[in-house]
Length: 317
Image (cartoon, rainbow, N blue to C red):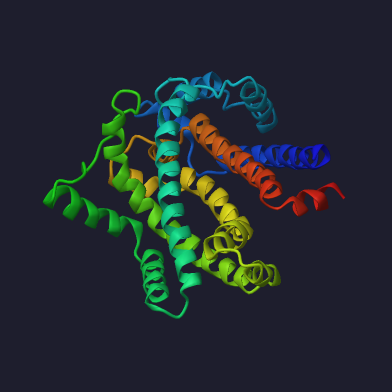
């Protein structure tokens, strides 16, 4: 297990270094000059030179990269060139909103997707499978922005069941926090629920036709035990993979949902930074997103070895 863990940690460290280089180079390749945006109407050469010198934009890319890495390693992500506020504080305010929204969306999607997938596999060929497939197709086909607008129109404006926008911190009002986030989390989780349902159904069908399932049934085990402890557990690897990857995707891709429901999350911060050519903020948000992907993938790999010990054995070999 130690060798397996060390191997995965080494791979994650190399990936993080490469991601840092790509992030830095990609941000510098964006069109536009942040010095021009900061100068406003006063764009004389002296003002532009002073701005570039103040924010280190006049230095070589190698020097800027070293400063970026050395400061980031100490937890210093710089200051916004638009507001002057510490980037770490800006991310610290926005990221928890998106993480909470993403985790809640993952929980809703997993409950719906795994449950519908198991029912569709166990009762294949019947009305339950047809209904599950229809809901999955609907979840994959309907765009999030349209579904969000319809939800606001009917569930918030017409019926008044949920707030149409806004956010309440969890520790200030837990009930109000969940009341504001349930609807956007449900909208964000619809497409993921459909994917989980389809993959769970496919994996369950493969597991139910395996020899060990027939052996368990021949031993007289109850159907719930055969489905829950044997078939479903061996089908969870695919589900864990999807959930792990989609959690990282939701953290970085919840922009549309956050915009529709006016949530002060990571997506809004990212979009504003791109439009304002705020290099430190862009670098920080992309680096945090890449780090989240790497950490989540590492946790998924370790969870594989818990679900299926054979993977750990092969990793040690």
